[in-house]
Amino acid sequence: MGELKWRSRLRPSVAAIGALAMILVAFGAAITTSQEEESDPCTGYDDAAYAYCNAYCETLDCDENPASEEKCLYTFDRFADYTGEAPPCETPES
Image (cartoon, rainbow, N blue to C red; front, side):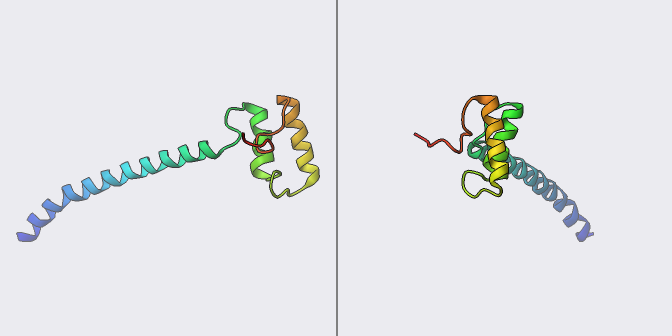
């Protein structure tokens, strides 16, 4: 009998811990998304311009360690065609 009482007292605690875990996971995901948006130099560009910006600045990493000069030049030119400017990772911050 005593074991049954102990189990019935434990159930609400387990449910509360599960709910708290879900809240913490959701909060952690929100923080991660916010940090990614702050560090994304391509935020603010739409569609193709964003895709070329992301390819140039992040995927190919042309501003710091270019994987392929040919691909970087092509991507730079396509981004400039859409926006009329250099990718934001190439422009010095003021």
